[in-house]
Image 1 (cartoon, helix red, strand yellow):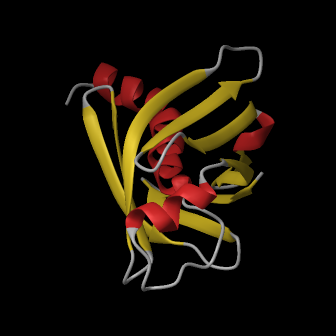
Image 2 (cartoon, helix red, strand yellow):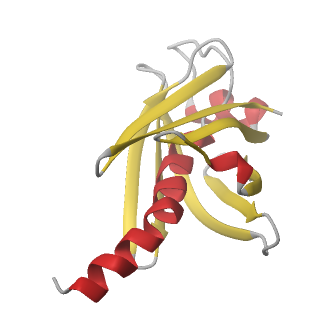
Length: 145
């Protein structure tokens, strides 16, 4: 990989990292019984989920964004959206599903030709996502609005 491609990738890294982590954020902020069906588990929780804390290493990403959020549009489709301060809102649609037995949610979204798929579990109405991105740790906290 040449130097120009590495520099371009480093510039896109915070953006890609946020979108990647937001995939995980489509999780409803609730406890779910293991015996429910997909429809009964997700429909009551279709809502908007906002990022309350986002850090990449020591950098507070929310200083650069007016908002970062996930909106569950229906029982299968989600929208990841964010707005940089002084910029325009960006949004990407994807799909999610829930496993009624394990209470795990899986989200999948395509961005710039790359598909991201993540599985996570939420408890007590809040969740935190932690990922290592190159040499920095990305930590994002979300809760239901």
